Image (tube, rainbow, N blue to C red; front, side, top):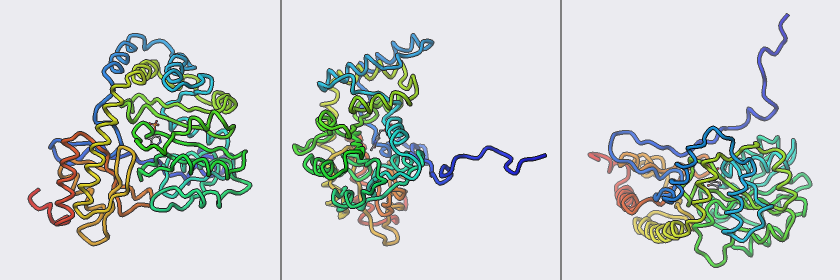
Length: 375
Ligand SMILES: *Cc1c(COP(=O)(O)O)cnc(C)c1O
């Protein structure tokens, strides 16, 4: 006797999920390549973080501290935070998924913006919820539009501030207005993966809101400015009650021993961070100006990447630009899956890479894909 279903079948909704597609890491051809497709730092981690990682390699047989206590203490000291309100994760992606799992159930709604970070969409779907998409204005989250979409089924709002892949941000006044307009049972998740890069007086990552309200969570990562993307370390600052919930469902050892060790060293090396911010500020502005001078539109960015817009004219499209750059060893991110088919996202790399991008885009803007002849 055979049952009508002959193999395991996933829960309703799982097959609707499209897997996250990371930025490309290789170009065709053997020439020197620059990976500018995943917003990684061009500087690598602090030397002290690499040392700490290597030392931790001597104890790979031991389980790490499941509470990541020492890392949480280092984070708390660095930012003047309450250690009991910090939870670490296997990257901040882990924490975003855990928050969705904990607070969004089948049929519930989670709001994100049209060009918001795709992990929110996947996390909401994974928990059985319905992603509700808010329209943006000038590639920026629109508080009024978000608030219009709140219903009795809304359980969470996910905002990357600054947002990836647009590089735009909401000033603190707007975040406060968003929070004030939300019912108090709706969780507001502020994903501050690029907070360290922002040099704007009207920006804050949301730490002080977490201290004040019961429904605000802020997430951060060691993957971007700290240069530890491969180690997978993130953290969140949240009300104690939310930390308790996430601690119940997270993996008991979701941060590795080498990750804890390297994270502590990295967060204590403020010089490395300052150098990275200064480099980014200089070359972000320089590249944005160069690309505008080439006649292409750039969305003003406060993060470590820019969104460049192209026309639909054959020979001058975003897909052709991506290919044109790839042939010069410059790997960038197509963002069609972010409802941005006419744009590409370019990470700010080394001075060498940034100058090459500027020169290549000038050439592309002038001659289009034809310029590739003989390249
Ligand atoms: C890169 C990024 C993250 C970080 O992800 P990790 O899992 O910590 O590596 C989170 N949010 C946004 C918007 C990002 O761009």
